[in-house]
Image (cartoon, rainbow, N blue to C red):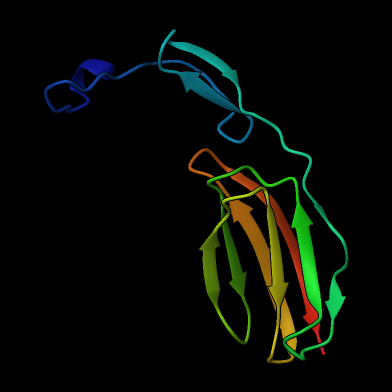
Length: 112
């Protein structure tokens, strides 16, 4: 029962059903709507760990965050819809991108 949900002044609680992976609430209308979709692509998933060879990811929404996890960890924000990533330490890396709404991209990259 929602009457037992604690809130702060100015907060609103909404009851309903939604798939949190694919849907969100439009706070302007109070309606459940589909989350935006993105056409993200990566040019390759194997690179040299020489600091020069790069992975290029395109189609990222401006303002999204890219996370690189592996032998070296890094995060950075996307300001132009694309990301170029080079590696200086060999290994397997999980590369993902997300917005405040959801995860939008995830893959493994091998640097050798």
